[in-house]
Image 1 (spheres, one colour):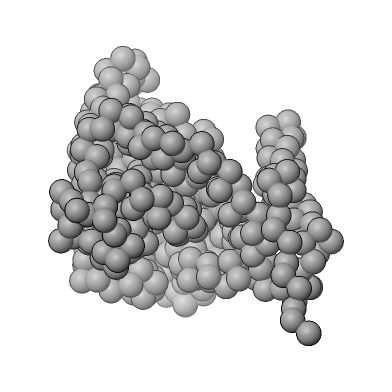
Image 2: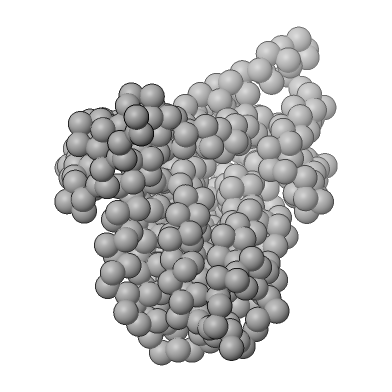
Length: 485
């Protein structure tokens, strides 16, 4: 007897778990000032119940949906664990303190935000990794900004803007390779097309950071007693040498050589442990190995007696990442059951029904990517699912796939760190020590790029047809049909 087809979820049914999650997240985070863990558990539970009762899914299918996204995110979870180890050992070894020290000596409040954004942009462009940039250079910028009297939210906004510039534009970035692969175009065709939306957004972002530096009165000059106290405290608490920069140099070199992020960060952890044993020897050297293990597991606890230094340098360790990992697991469980049940696809299809022009099609793509970042809590799903759904719609209109790949990156990649329960948002807020909603108003590049992309869609600026560049199609020639003529 043939198996009965599973019912297609209605739009109303598909929206029920979304409404439950959004409502409970708002109440828990905004009203109770809590975390997003339990609302996402509730949402996954509601989605599972609806999948089993209304859609006839078996428990095996529901369980596979819940776990599929988690399994796919295991590499990211391993990176998170390694970053916790890296932060703890790098602080204990003096790597982060020496970066802060040098930053304090060369930066000033007037141009700090612009410099932080540019530095993070260059590093992320060279490495293709926003996560590595934030955990190394970005972490140091947070310390420098705090010492210079810059609000942490502004510094975090500059770091996130710079880090995601490279995540979007670097050929070494996984998302930069994923978007054109999903859309059906070539990597460098995709990157060249993104220049048109990224350049104006980036220039405006730098201008806004410059304006913040000029218009906001500085709380003091560099040569303040607090500044001098921090300098002297760092120098007394650690043996600070340029040789300590070998750890970040090694990580950046390995990533530049296209070594994957996880082994690169593990090498950074190993180098940090070696530098701790060489440069930060304890009294008598008897407990050096114990200090390494403590820094890796529990992080570094600063006890200098100077609050600004102790607050800054008490961080890291495996345990510091457990809360973030739990958030990622429950978020991906929710996204997984929503995708497996077809409810996510039904919501996206409803959005697409309103896309009757090029401008509305691009707007629908961008809104879907933003929604996927919020619902599926993962930037990869936010690229893959809308990319697959809307690829045919772009081809039917004769639009080159590079328009789709650009829209995916302008939205899915850049808005992912703005959602607190997204893997990227949870990571950035944990590493930088600033909540995603707190730095969101200052993540100028991330906010502006989707708006520029929508503007281009409605005005037709840089929107290209298939016949304009047919040689850069990948796997889409047969699908395009007569549109190429």
